[in-house]
Each structure stands twice: as C-alpha cells, then as structure tokens.
Length: 491
Image (cartoon, rainbow, N blue to C red; front, side, top):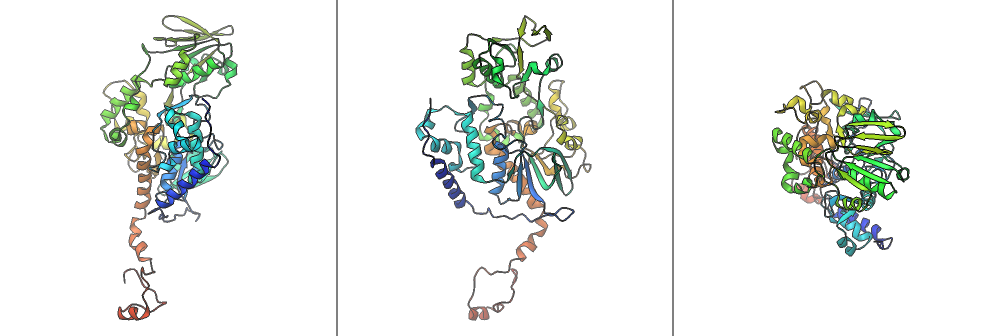
C-alpha cells in the first residue's frame, strides 16, 4: 500500500515541537562539567562516542539532556549509512513491536510514533503492525537533525589507548583525539566480526559466498541456485532477496532438527528483565546465555511467509554443511543426508564476539577482565562465551589484575560486548534502550562528577552575585558590603 505523505511542513513542525518540549524540560540541563586539559594544555573532550547509529544517537542525546555537551560522536560510515538499516539490512519491517520506546528518552514528540503520524497520518500508524525498516532509518536521520549532536562521519578509528587521566582515540587519517571517557556504541559486530564457518571460507573462492551481513548485488542471483546456511531472521532476509531477484531455486539448511519459532526476546521486554538482568548472579547469566543460544532467533513473520510463498523455496532440517567443495563450476555441499549443488551460497551464521578480531580494541583486550578470568563454567559447553569482557554494572571494562591497567574503566561497552554481563539488557536490541541508555548516561555523568567532587566547596564559594539585590539602606542595616564590594557565598 502506497501511503500519502503529509505536507512537507509536517516534519518541520514536529521538529519545532520537539525543540519546544526540550526547552520546557530543560531544568538542570545546563553545562556543569569542569573543563580538563591534556598534557599539552589542549582542552579535552568529556566524552567520545564511537558509533552514530541508534545507540550512539540515544546516548549522545541523553548526555546532552544531563548537561554534558562537550562530546563528539565518531562514525566510520558516510552520513545516512550509520548502522545496519540503510546498508545490509534487508527486512521490510524491523522485528521490534511498533510501540517500542527508548530513543525518545521519555519525550513523546521525539518518538517513532510521532514521526510516523506526522509523515503520514495517525490512521496510517494504526494500520501498521510493525515499523517499516526504511521508515526507522528515516526516523533516525530526522532524530539526528532535531537533537543536533556533534557528529563526525567518515572517521575510521584504528586504535583506542587509555591511561589514568584519559583515553586517546586515533583515527586512520592520523588525528589523535583525547577524551576523558569513551563509549563504544558500535553494534553487533563492534566487539568482533561476522562469522563465516571455516569450511566455507577455506573451501570456496571469496566471490562464491557471502555472509548475510555483506552488501551484495541481488541481480547476480537471477537464475541461480542459492544455498543458505542458517534459519534465523537474517537467513530469511537473504532468501527473500534471492527469490525476488529471480533465483532459480533457494535451499535453506538448518543445522538443528526444527525451525526456531519462539521469540523469547519479546517475552523479556518487561521493566523487570530490562532494568535488572545485569544484577543476576554470574551462574544465572551463563545459564541464560546458553539457553538463549540454544533457541536461536526466530525469523521475522513477514519474511517467513514471503519466502514460503515461492514454490522454488525449500527448507531442510538436520542439514549442517559437513563437506563443501567445487565440482567444475558448481558448489557441492554434503550434509548427513543428501548432496546439494549451488551456484552461490550465504552464511547466515551470526557474529563472533572476540575483541582480538578488532585491531582498535587490542589494548583493551590485552588487559580487560574477560569472563574466563572471573567465571569457571560447570562443563565444557559454550566456551566461546568466555571471551566476552566481564563488565561492571555500569558497562565499564575492569582491569584483569588490579593496578595493571589504570584508566581502562574510562571505556564503556554499549555494544555486543555487553551481552554476557548485561543479559537481555545488552546493547544490541532496540527493546533494551528504554532502560539501558539512561543507565549508561548515569554511569558516565557519575564518573565525571566523581572526578570533580573534591572541588565542590570551591565551586559553590566561587559565586559572588547575591540572589537578591538590596537597596543601599537595607544593606547598611544588615551590615552588608556597600555596592561594588565583593561578597562571598559564605558571608
């Protein structure tokens, strides 16, 4: 259904309403952080946020509304291409329910619903079940323009170093940015890399396979036989892309005995789970992570039915790819039960979280506490999860050994690295933002405030302007200094 957009002024009017609402709510939002300077005397940024997608935008705006304005967001992508929504995401709708909140930080005029209703109509909002992906992308772009964050695009981070006094973020262009704190808001692959099984990458030329996160030309799949390893949301997104491009046949292979159809993330979207899952004992966090990994993520409803509507789409259970090779121009895949022949294959196999795969995280990985340093699993299952960082309750890295990495706690992991320590309130889902973003912002402001708490008396004693201006005869009666003479707050 093609929607009729409202007048071109509607979104501008909404933007003005947001600014008016922010003005109405601006109590206690004035800047309060004392400036700091680096070793050369140059002013330091208070916070650098790496990543200007949905997480980075929300954290940056939350800090603005708490009076922390000396910040900078860095993103390696061009403007408009931050995150997944305008790049490799192929789903028509986002998986989250349309009434999702969090990015607006409690301001209704800044919500996705207000945006959509202004762009189309309240009736149009009522008629959709989930938010179209491109509308979510356009919402984030509009959000960015309204909250007016300082963002630098095309800024590739190559190194993050830290010390007792701050963090140095080095860019590929040679610039070194000095900040007091850094927040990693780099999404699903910001703590590792998208995972292609070794038997695919080692057996096939690179041009014969893709990961579901790759950006590829759909037209190359026309009249081709396509194989997909995996059965989650990304697998179905790729399947629909191939089928609509005119693939001759698409075979989806599941390693397990059944399709994952229970979306437990939705069941955990409660104030209890989202606000307190970081507080549960380590053993329970470990067990829950294993339970969730065993269930996998169910496909998005719209792409599941879309794929299944094609007669040339097939699903195979218990069909892990045991052997892969080339026979002439064909890719031969052997499972325990049958042999497939494909022209092109996709690995919809998720992400590996391992800081060692990210060169810019090398110095953090060398000294940060990991789960393997703080927790011994009761069996040998899920050992890959031991490579996750062991974060504190504020998303901060902690030293592997006390005293050996001062300053590592100046870095906050609000990305996939937080998943083990924060549980369902990790940073990779929109649903967690309502509770996670304020906690990150509070942790950042708490750190900054603690660094200046020794100066509290000096701060209040520095004020010289009386709250009431007395006439001269009253000043004389009260024994106050005459006009023009200084008066301290203590007097």
